[in-house]
Length: 161
Image 1 (cartoon, one colour):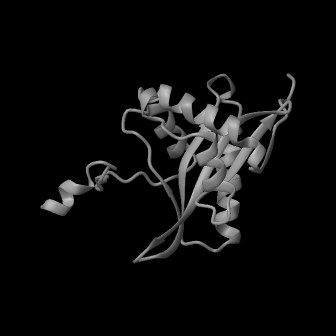
Image 2 (cartoon, helix red, strand yellow):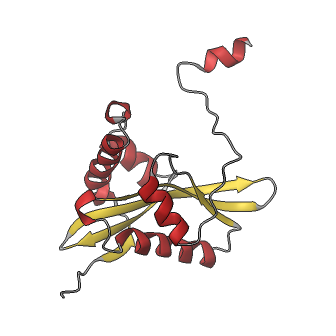
């Protein structure tokens, strides 16, 4: 059996078109294709501008980006500095090859090197393959917290309350 070769590296501005392609593919998978409003320009500015809002790891296979891990710093009032994994995305045709696991391992190494207290993320309750994957790796999956948010355009509702 031939061993598939892929590499994990830090993302670069030139990776933005593939990053957006994978984000859109994830949105399709999550049945929310119409909800992606980001542009390549947004991602370049927000990830690689003067004040980056996120960091990026990419998985490359045959000079093509087949997976990403997009993450950023958070702060817990109880624990201190944490890293938040916004999305771990591997092309559907490249899943089950170990790429997602290696992306997550690379992020764990960053968390250890930077001495953060937690690495955290979310998973949709219906995404059994992802839940099983995270459990297999030994992740704690909490069920007692609810996600809350205000959405742009609805902020005024909170201000009127």
